Image (cartoon, rainbow, N blue to C red; front, side):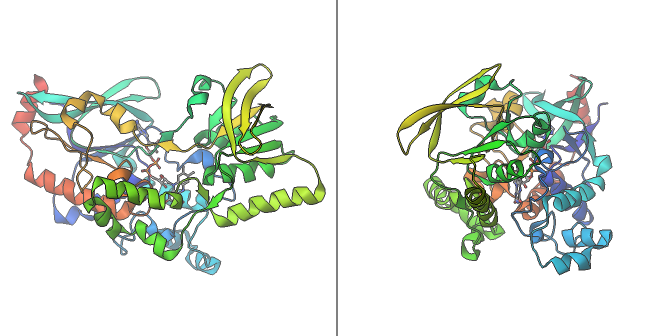
Length: 433
Ligand SMILES: Cc1cc2nc3c(=O)[nH]c(=O)nc-3n(C[C@H](O)[C@H](O)[C@H](O)COP(=O)(O)OP(=O)(O)OC[C@H]3O[C@@H](n4cnc5c(N)ncnc54)[C@H](O)[C@@H]3O)c2cc1C
């Protein structure tokens, strides 16, 4: 009889690690769930190609994997520091914002404690219904490992926590296979292959674009760097306290209870807390770099603001971007050895993975507990993490509410498991058909 998991989680990033922690800490309340997470990377790493030396967190360490849900958890950032012997030294830093390297180490430390609950090196490629007498009782989760082997597992419930996928602007789509054009999500890996590049374009006006610009301009033998933005300036992320309240866990209830139009208006009003903005400190560093260039002379760094990319052509000499300067209403073409697209992330990949279930899931609406609504003949519970910004608010793609959200999903899962007590015979029969 094939094994049936209570839960399969797709992805083992912060969202699903936090869920593993929440489930572990709810064990006393009910029978433990048989949960397995599937992660395509060979081992845990948090946005590994953006682990830049000077980058730090954009969020307080108190919004770690556990604290806001359970400050007494052994998985808090504070306990991690204690275990590593750095608690007092960290306190001396007087900062709420650890370096990205340190937070990656914290997340790896947490992930390591669930080594047995995660299958690394497997990419989930699709999820299919398992039909039993006209009702869908189980899901078939198909993944491919690094050797190309297809693996199928059965589960009663599913949590999709796959993060975002690189957003590639239309004009660059035809160059997907050109190694000279790459997204910020693979920046360090691909830049290492272009160490000889003399002229690099960075496209975008957000935190990643700003970080990459600073990284490139400071490299030994630094190339010429053009920062290309449609906007007139790089705007600072507003993280002042009253505005920051939109990232409070309670605000999720408020957002979810509003009408669709009100939610859209909220997203619009607070869009610049997270998108197309950068840390003020980083903006000041960039300004300083340009000022320094004015002192010493030269034109190695350029801020091509109010520039639209009108055309992209690649040939043996390089990647040629035709730029429209909105300010002077003029077009010109520049040749680059490498183009970095810091153009954000799309959050709809779950629809591709769940496509074989589309007939049961309608328009992919979720309830307050992040569970996808389904037709009455579809019984598995499917939860989404990080893909519910429209319904749950701007905090959804960030770490802000991760610990609280996973507490809610964990409780919903345990309630589902308790209510739908397993029917081993019915399921075993179903599997054999
Ligand atoms: C460079 C960068 C810095 C950031 N810094 C901050 C910050 O300081 N503060 C903040 O609040 N937010 C930050 N964010 C936002 C970020 O979304 C969250 O920090 C966090 O990573 C979300 O966790 P997640 O688990 O939902 O998604 P992810 O961290 O993206 O993890 C998803 C995981 O799923 C895996 N996966 C994807 N598809 C599959 C598949 N088909 N099969 C198997 N595995 C799969 C991926 O390999 C990955 O490990 C940052 C984002 C970026 C890109």
